[in-house]
Image (tube, helix red, strand yellow):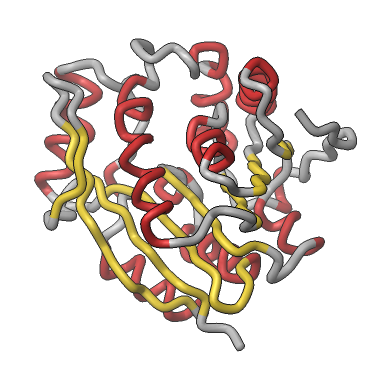
Length: 246
């Protein structure tokens, strides 16, 4: 794994981050790579998310940024698909878990404990492909985060988002069932008011200079573990944007 300079984490006021939300994931970092643990749904979703990206953007030789990478699940998939991957997260425990797992797999991934805003200040318009999965619903200002992702993207580059719709069905499925009935996720993982409607995401993208190409549903069967793309984005969904900047 590549050597990286010591991280210089951003001060809390400099980042679009909720420290309480960050703490939830930091506390579980040591469990990230357990496929039957608290992050089991992510392990099931990841192959579909990774394929969605690979089918829509050329990864071989591309400079890729995974924002909110957690323990490195998607970053490793993108690296194996040929991308030159930088992956960032503000939870130090997650980055430690990611670096260790990448080293065990002999993968070269540039992991950094920094914010997207910090990378954008130093490396604007530098990435061919940007992914931000299951993160927007955990930040205080998702519209500002989307603007930061646009600032990071090269002209003609790709931005991929996954998040959760805000409606009655998603409340019952992603919060009541997943967290309180089936125990697929720790209780309190998601807050209903922070879930994001596709129309909101599309509007923020346009404001940021991104063009929305596609929205696809991401169906997950909690009983079989089966995950697949669908035409129904009413709960989990993926969005594909391209940079409209000249």
